[in-house]
Image (cartoon, rainbow, N blue to C red; front, side, top):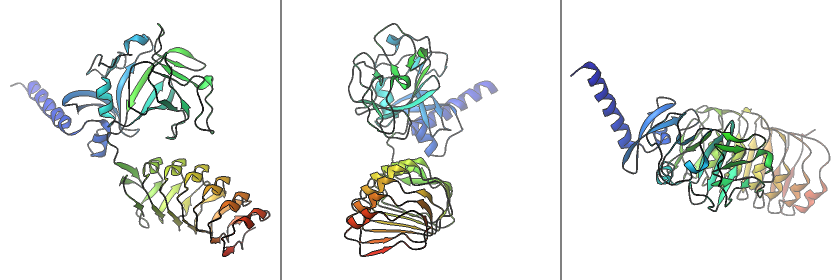
Amino acid sequence: MSSTSSLLSLLCACATVVAQQYSSCFEILEAGKSQGDGDYFLLVNNRTLKANCDMTAGGWTLVMNVPATTPQNNFTTPNAVNENTTDVTTFFKFSDDDINAISGFRTRFRFNCSTQQIFVSRQFGWTSLRGQSNWTTDRNRDTIDDCTASNSDFIFSDNNSTNLNQNVTCNANLSIAFGAISDVQGCYLGQVGWNNRATLWAGSPTRTRAFVFGKSWNISSTTASPDVGTYTGPISSEIGLLTNLVTWSLSTALTGTIPSQVGLLISLNTWNIIHVKGITGSLPSQIGNLKSLRTIDFHDTTLGGTLPTEIGRWSNLDSWTSYLTLLSGPIPSQIGRLTRAWFMSLDNNKFNGTIPTEIGLASAVQRLSLGGNM
């Protein structure tokens, strides 16, 4: 056997091994088998498929590639087209069944139209058929749905749609449409029009872990307490995947801002940030979604900025300590809505202005400390 034949046999054997173990790019990345961005072999619905992987962005699998000159009717089919090619100049798509298997039947996909990138979701998974229900788009990719996107004349379109998130505008200038009943080509991008390249990417299959604090965490975990000095760097936005998290204690060398995805921690009961000197920025307004919070302790930390008015939504809060922080500005009047809180120690920060009279509405407070502020 020639050396060339031997090499080809070796490559085929390696591809078979990869395919037998992993059904998506994310699984390869999570298993520590990534060789960087590029082509890999996957095992999807008991078949070996070639796929392009974006490992840099977290293990996304390219499941549809639509060049700008591709007519709409070419890709409004649930079947595979030009399977096992990854040539970006060629139209190709996986079957809808394979797309949903690669995503682990999760409902969120990454969609690129020209230079615009969004997340598109459907409650029942991906479909390439027009006029299906339950489509939404996440225009700023913060994992919070922004606009409705169901339309009888498209696979999806959020043009002139209903707004689902008050922080994002669903106007036509920023809209994206795909799979129209017409002879137009590519995808539609507001202010640009049709004839744009589109790509669809499927993410994690059966997402059970999140990469937070520099390591993989079980999403079903109820406690995240990194040890002092063990973890460094910023807090990943994937913290928002830990929706079962009950206790979150930070006492590390973490840096950067607290991501807005913290607002997705709907089960969070206890939140401690103690001796963390690398945190910058302010608390995101999304913390108002943490309605299960009972205890907060921000102690000896560089966390700063003004308190968002959304603190008034902490309806179950019992105890709140903010001591030796850089929190500043006036204390919002919404503090009066914390009617369950019996303990508030907000001393030695950078608060200024007058104490809001509404604080008197927090009738359960037995101990209140506001000394040492400006």
